[in-house]
Length: 101
Image (spheres, one colour):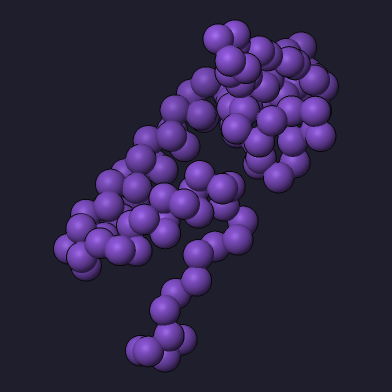
């Protein structure tokens, strides 16, 4: 990448991640460096937390068609079988669904 070429937003991020990066792109370099340091610490913390709980996260691109993209999802193992656990808000209600992986 040349000095004149602006970095592109990673396409593998979900919509919220892409929007967050586009917003950050409008900030000053010092702010971007602080955000970068924070995000590195957050990624390390989440990785440790997931390892301790035995839970990982799934990519929104792989959500079934009837699960909203905004749903949170975790992957957990129960009795040797891995399951996706989806949860999302639908108006005033919280919906959830569990599916074998």
